[in-house]
Image 1 (tube, rainbow over the protein chains, first blue to last red):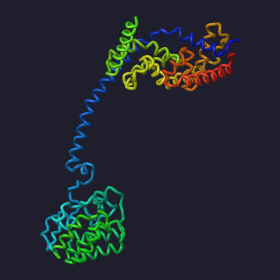
Image 2 (image 1 turned 45 degrees about the horizontal axis):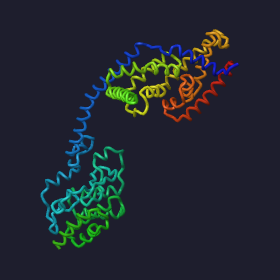
Image 3 (image 1 turned 45 degrees about the vertical axis):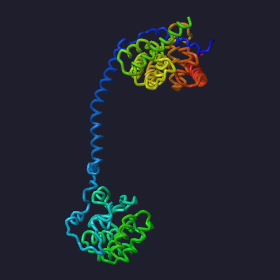
Image 4 (image 1 turned 90 degrees about the vertical axis):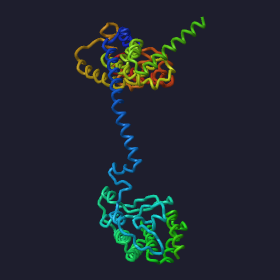
Amino acid sequence: MSDPLARATRALRDKYDATARDEGDPATRDRVIERAVRDGRERRIGRLVLLPIAATFVLFATWAAATGRLPTFLGGKAPNEPTLPVATSAATTAPTPRASGLVADEREPAPSATEIPAATEIPTPQASVAIVHERAAPSSSGARVPSAPSVAAAASHEPHVPSPEDELYAAAHSAHFEQRDFGRALAAWDAYLAKAPAGRFAPEARYNRALCLARLGRTVEAKAALAPFASGAMGGYRRDEASKLLERLGDGN
Amino acid sequence: MKTQAALYLTAIDHERESLVDRLRRGERAALGEAFDAHHVAVRGLARRFVGHDGFAEDLVQEVFLALPRALAAFEGRSSLRTFLLGMVVNHARHHVRSAARRRAMVARYSEEAHKVSLDGVSEASRAEIAKMLERAMDELSIDHRTAFVLLELEERTSAEAAEIVGVPEATMRTRLFHAKKKLRELLTEWGMS
């Protein structure tokens, strides 16, 4: 008896050989051509519809990014949109007497908008807004400046109970930048720094404290407070601003 | 004579290249030409592979429909026909599964319906033996099935089969060895001797 597999293979081969030249279903060719044509047409239509939409979207996104409106469209606030009520109110407030000849616009953490060309973002705790996380923005010297979150940022996160340190920071910020009571602000910054000497906003609090000292005419103390920033002891943090302010304080002293 | 052969080969190459190029561009006529030139070979392999005319016809259609896009990966190292046969192997998996399920179902219902002598002489016996082998092939892995179909049923050389599948010849021969071993065991188990 021969190998059963060989016999079975021969039988199966014969079965298929009998239909080797079979043309199959004549409709198959037509179906293939028809489907190919339809697929090609659908792809072309898809390209005609989708490409303009994609191009419009890209152009819009580019325009929004170039004009600074992208965060707004993404659900946030535009960078040039004021995040603090104080920013608006301070802009309309009459200039206050300058200490030691400083021209400091306290809307910004930098002591003077005219003296320090590149205004940088500062911690901006809202009076009743929880400080959720540290938001860093590049300073003019390239260092990262920690800042408190805005309302939009807070709204985008889960509710957060502010810590005592955060509340102290918010109070100091309010006294300094909203009420412009530099004496009280100085005490508040000291309170914050006493509570959180290594807190996440401590460097900015020290810098603001130095601004308060300068505002109050305590130039020697202000210069001492600014020196670590200007010397780079804090890295690049507020270095340029502190150096320029020290120059001005030196003139006035 | 040599020049004529060279010219002929150049013409063939040119023709092949131009057909491939036209297919890549999605030319409807080119797809028709490719179908006319290769559908018999493609269908033959599809039938042997799947073991069912209806599913094989679906596979043929699927392969030719996928051809224009698949040609993006065609480097011209093999003939268009070899490329198409490779596509049959690559696209056959789910058609084989469907056909195997159908065969298993039919086998269950017809097991006791008619008993045919497996002497291999009568037409009925040969048809039954062929069916039995098809069912046994359903027990193979797709790689072993491919090796058996290409090397045994289509009687291709291991070089051809290896080119179609895209594996070394030795791999094809090893797969065939294991496929035949398994098939032999199954056929014996099912009463063939």
